[in-house]
Image (cartoon, rainbow, N blue to C red; front, side, top):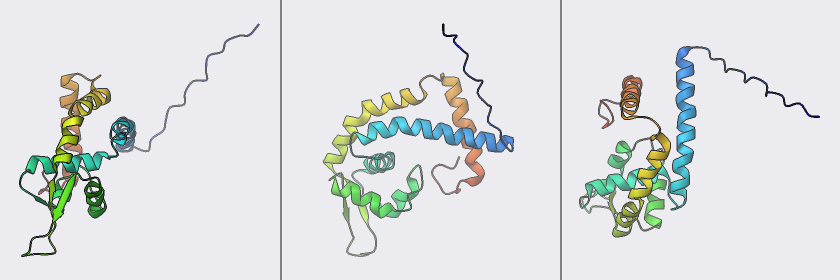
Length: 164
């Protein structure tokens, strides 16, 4: 006869400080939530960063956006903005041009194909956000957003569109 045993109690993680615990909880949360969006965007040969770039270009359409301006508006840093743009251009989602007056400047525009992709992703992206955080109520979501803004304020460039 086999006796069922309770699993060993889980060992609580130790932290060096409350700041470290908060940071590691934030990092772990980001990792878990990122897995959900990677599944969605991966089905379309896209990353979240590339999706973010397409949304920014669509918001600016029909006006082009300079590459460096796009890099400054992204949610997260893009140390290799050229590679990001190369991928979007290879897929036919953006076109890049260089003005005759300044050949070093690169301007980007979303293509009709890129606009179609964004339109097709509207519902799935909303469903992804619900899967990520839909279990939290409106007050919790508002409080969380406010706390996250406050946490990053001293580290945010005052010129950034993300600075509050």
